[in-house]
Amino acid sequence: MGLPALGLLPVLAVLSGANALHAAEPATVSFYECLRCAKAPVVDGKLDDPCWQSLPAMDQFYQYWTPVAKPPPLKTAARLCFDDRGLYMGLTLYEDRLDQIKAKITSRDAPDLWQDDCVEIMLDPTNGGTGYYKFTTNSLATRYDEKTTNMVMDSGWNVEGWQVKTSRGNDAWYIELSLPWSDLDRKPREGDIWSFDLVRYGYCSGAFKGVTWALGGSYANPSRFGHLGFGRFAPWTDAALAHVAKTLAKTKGDRFRMLLPGLVLTHDRGRWQRQGLKEWVQVALKLPDQELQQAGTATAGLSESDVKARLDKSVAELTTKLSELHTQAAAGDLSPGVAALAFDQLATLRRQLADVKWEAKLWALVAEE
Image (cartoon, rainbow, N blue to C red):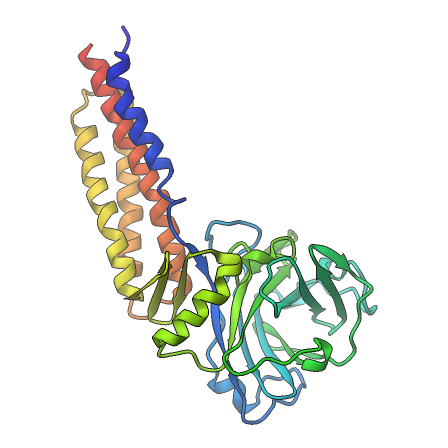
């Protein structure tokens, strides 16, 4: 007994469309307002300077080496500021097993420094997506720097102006770093935008773990770096948005989305859309709610069988996942990072619901033959 070919065509067409759900979304782009500091911090590794207390946190990190938003295995936060002399960074690297931090490399420019618990800081002032300056350091304040041009790495490139100090607390270790503009042979003006990524490697669990501030960003993929905006860009005037769109177009094209504290800015083919962060997630939940009902209706129409039992179980599991995402969206302190993860989970959930729905419909058609 076979299913008529004409009856199968609409099922295959919709399944194909369901697989394209995630691909149709604008790229998620990280953006941080790097504010000017009235007084530069003292680089001693303690992060107790007044400037660190007032700056916004860069804490929206993702699992490393994947283009899909996945929860970060290492909790990390950074704060950045600048003045006429250089860029300053204060990093908090949370760790429950501080005594197991891997810290063996002490030699300047050791190529295996990345095999210690460390961070990589990458800057591309040109926003070209094919080159950058990279600065790596570990908990011993060991330094490594390199320059990549047109995706060709030069590990012999060295600058000596940048300084690093580190310290340890009860549940985290800290990095304080200053990078003079003279090391980069250029200085940003107020309103400039540079490509940037911050990557962290950790080995305390006995296996490699990594996080990146820019989703999909890495030393091998500078076109996916996030962006530092020097100065204040909020409240995001039309002029500021036009400047961002023009700058990011080099690497992000004309469709991208920036998740900011309390705000989502989506650029789509020359137009900007503003949404509240919570509103954006809640709107995204509406379609899965409808699709869950459709999947449940499709499985309810099946005769009792092992197939129906399996599909009913899938619907129950997806119902639980969707309920958890509703709870996250209702949280009063919804962060951009949590929102981004929830949005990607919704895309996966929608594909799974489509699979359940159309498999149930397929079995229903087979049963009619």
